[in-house]
Amino acid sequence: MKHFLRVLTQFFVFLYCKCLWRGLKFVVRKFSGRCELQRICYNNKHGPVFVFSRPLSSCPLQLLQSALSVHPDKVEKTIEDIMALKKINPDTNPQLSVSLQASLLQIVGYRSLLAEVEKLRREPYDSENPEHEDTLMKLWKELRPDTPLTSRISKQWCEIGFQGSDPKTDFRGMGLLGLHNLLYFAEHDKVTALQMLQDSLQPKHKYAKTERTAIFYSFAIVGINITDLAYSLLVGGALKTHLYNVAPEMPNLLHFQQTFCYLMQEFHRFWIEEDPSDIMEFNRVRSKFHRRILRQLKNPDMALCPHFSASDLHLVNL
Image (tube, rainbow, N blue to C red; front, side, top):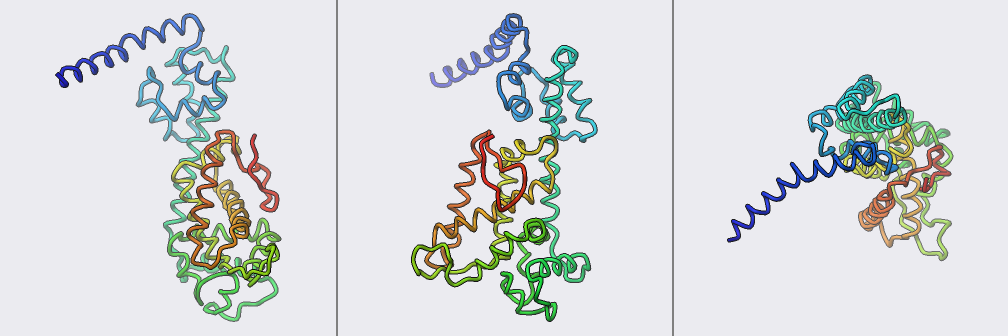
């Protein structure tokens, strides 16, 4: 009996999908004058992105799948093919074509950004590579402009938050991505980066309401850890909310690095607010901070401030 009911249910689902649903869509199109694609785009602010996130029931899956991996130069032609397939006149629906192109560029750009970030993450730091060494030296000069480095292998690296005498061992998890993010922060918002570094070295922080001792954190190590957090947000798709709202066309590495700068500053504030009893609470504080960012990014209208200045960055509802 259960088998019979299961077969019967599957039959009605098949009937609905193949016949009734198509008939309903035909009637709706006749009365509204719009196809499914138009209704989604016009009735939802995030409709164009939604179109490529979930296949239209009447649009060939192959076309949408190929659209997601198309080269940026072929986005316009791909949108023309989709509109032709849906029998939409681009002359009478010019804004629809523009919106679909912009959304597809964002999605293609997000995938390209993911590949670029992954490439940097997978590239290990090589002390024999002059470019890697130059980048590391730039980081030291930005964070310790008045203190010369006595030698390449030195305990001085601990002054900017590395664990030992040779920073290359700390980049194992995030590769060059961690180094590039730290340097970007130090170069593009130097005042904030230096202030955070100084705060992280203090045995007591000035924000405390009491004289309670605050366990300092290692600036560079936290930067690498926050790089990992930003990377997980990117890979998991949570950053789509932010990047689609702030990048008018294709998100790129610059947007990701700006996001890192925002996360660094916000984590610094969060660490002070949490006032952990010791450094062993770092993972707990990080996990709590991660959950808070995820909650904020669930709002489809949420974005980081589009005009980057880490000292002024905050989540804003656009």
